Image 1 (cartoon, rainbow, N blue to C red):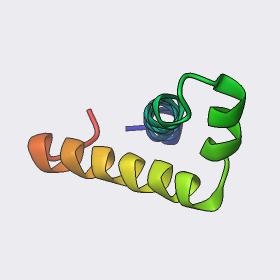
Image 2: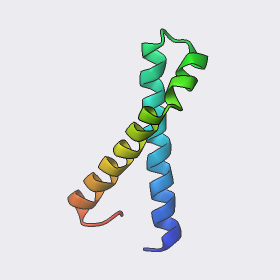
Image 3: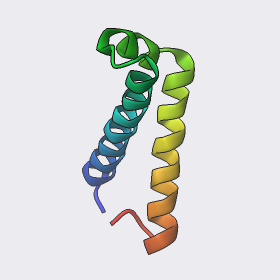
Length: 68
């Protein structure tokens, strides 16, 4: 595995995690995308993105023994 593969995998998982957090914020803000964007950039939302990313990486590693 190359470093670019691992970095790409990590960035892809982070993007999907951010999309999930934004979707939750969007639904909680009654479908107002501007409010959802502001909520999704707060520190606790970014913490949720990091945790979701790490959980996804952990699940991939534990299931297959690697990132592939």
